[in-house]
Amino acid sequence: MKRTIKLFIIVNLFVLFLHSSSRADYWEKVVSQGFGDPANDYAWSMETFRGKLYVGTLNPIRGAEIWCSSSGEPGSWKRTYNARSPLSNLGIRSLYADANHALYACTFNITGAEILRSLDGRSWTMVEKGRGLLRKQKDDTIRCMIRFGKYLYGGAGGKSAQLYRSKNGSNWTLVKTNPSFESTKVLDPNTGAVITNNILIGEMEIFKGQLYAFTWTRDMDLGNLIGQEIKDISTLIPKSPGAFEVWRSSDGVNWEKVVGKDDPYGNGMGFCLHNPENLANDVVTSVAVYKGKLYLGTQNDNGNSSIWRTENGEEWEKVLDFFSLGERFNFYVWRMIPFKDRLFIGTLNLALNYNGGLTTADKATGAQIWATESGDPGTFYNLVHNGFDGETIVYKGLEIPKNYGVRSFGILHDTLFAGTATIASVPVPKEDDPDQKTIAGKNIGCEVWKLIEE
Image (tube, rainbow, N blue to C red; front, side, top):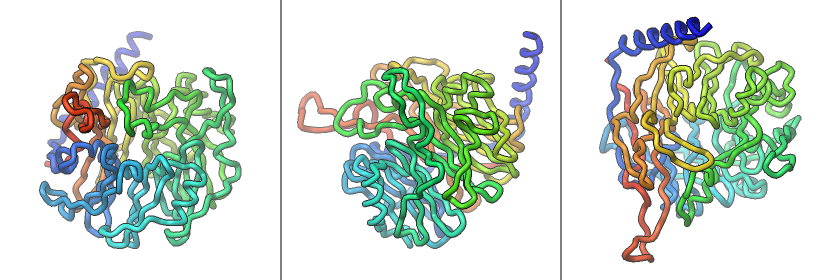
């Protein structure tokens, strides 16, 4: 048995070597130091609209920004939006182009998420009714938006997963789904309380004529970034007793659970009925439809993130397990995008300890990008394994990768772009002047890179 397992690993590694050596791809940096503001920590979202590439940032110090370029080249980027303050909008978590009609920016806001709308990419209008409704429901974030039929849908959350929709992009209503995404309950072993499992619709996708919604069981508490220093990662990402679920609908109102608690197809929350250890799959961080199959990527509390796919939404197979490749620090499969003949995968690769914060780890390489021509097991190969440039920073006495994750992908003029995530900025007093604020731990900011194919 052990010999068979070793042979399987050797064959997989050999296949990976053949793939990785068969193409002469490399990456070129087009944006550095957070577009000039090192507090732009994440290139949190990316979208193409009317011949320009847009990037929305996470900025805990000065508030969200949106930048755009018609070429993607260095020096061509212009800012088209900046928040009034981090207390208004911390970041642009999602950008969505409704064809050429309008560009939407969905925000994280500790006082209630906002939907911003632009008809030209330059001037932005807050959707007033959406703002009021979202604040009433106490939804602090919208992570995804998609058009399905005659409606635009927005996946939101905070305390519980919610779905909103609009016919015109200006007037939004809360969808009273049947059943409710809040219907799944789990027992919190820490408190003994029965709590809501699904706190956010993190991703949505259309597959074979149906709308799919992918839930989260926990989310970053970005409110903790305002006015205090982050002592450990658990203050940002609390542990969850549940695991993600997958739902689908033909009309946006009536929903069927295809992966989750008591689903009829034997998948279980986070695919726990495939393996009980999958209860650590508490988030679906990315999805894509590629060559007629639906793919999802997980966040795994134990660093064992994975990629799964399905042909019918009911039967799922695991096609990539990072642990089996020796990549134990890919905590998120953060983004997916089909580009030309390949499916590209961006990961978060950092030594995390959810009970005690960042840890030292020689094998935490920083942001990675994987690709495949088929999506089949054994065909994924790594194009980026060192955060693009191998640079590191020292944070709280620990040396960590500068670019620890690929958070966004975009396509402009037949070129693939990737946006990075860096360690979160927090305001702390300077030792010589307590009234002055600076950025703790770093002076870097997010970056944007483009793929050069040869």
